[in-house]
Image (tube, rainbow, N blue to C red; front, side):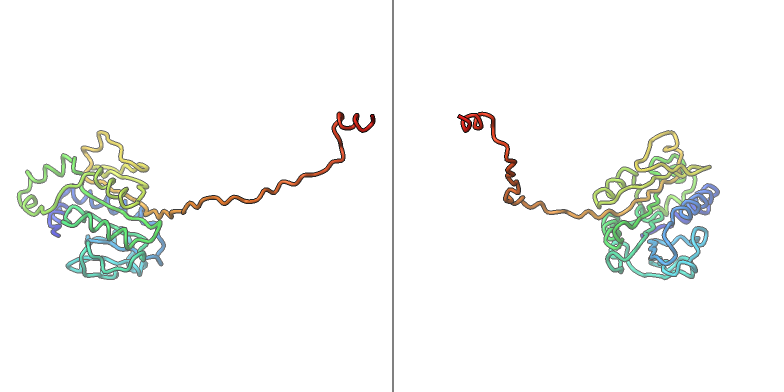
Amino acid sequence: MKRTFLFSLYETPQGKLLQTLEASYLKRSIMVSCKQTILQIGALGWENEFIDCSLYQKYSILDAKGEGCKESVKIFGKSYQLPVQSETVDLVILPHLLEFDAHRFQTMREIERVLKPEAEVIIINFNSLSIWVRLQFLWNKKMSRSWKGHFINRTRVADWLKLLNFEILTTSEFTLDSILTTPEKFKLGKRTYFSMAYAVRAVKRRYTLIPLAPAKAEPSRLVVVSTGIEPSAQRLKKDD
């Protein structure tokens, strides 16, 4: 997993703006309490801009180099083989990780495994349709040589989440001046081609199958009540 391109991009003027937008987005999106467990896969180095790691004592960062905010718990491991117990995490954050992960779908399976039912995942990726990101290869040869990843379009991410029983809550686009957030599915428009990155916030659903058993025939509970009223024909015969 090589994310050199990501950190080189953050050093550019546009990249610094993207970093500011992503930090603002993550700060608003982290809705779990400080006593709950958060797992970030892939360090950024500027986690303190969107979360107080000293307050969230169960904030863990899985990174091969052990980087990230000093107050967080460091985990050394592989994203596709998370050394975490099943259904113990309340929130997983993936900031530009899947694009550089050769085992990205297996990583998604691992995330589904460690998340609790009704827990959430936040995914941030580069926009594969972005004109600005594509032009970085032409403007900066050093940056283009450091690229060791694959662009992942938003449709594929949505398909993976659906396959793993996740429900998309919101989708966001990071443009040069703002963040556009919409509920559920992405909406294509002019912003799609000018946004630098996109984000998806989804919740893990747990569906319980209820077995259907054949209905048993029960004895009739109808009661015949005698009212003492006789039909008029029978009463006439008696009178004769």
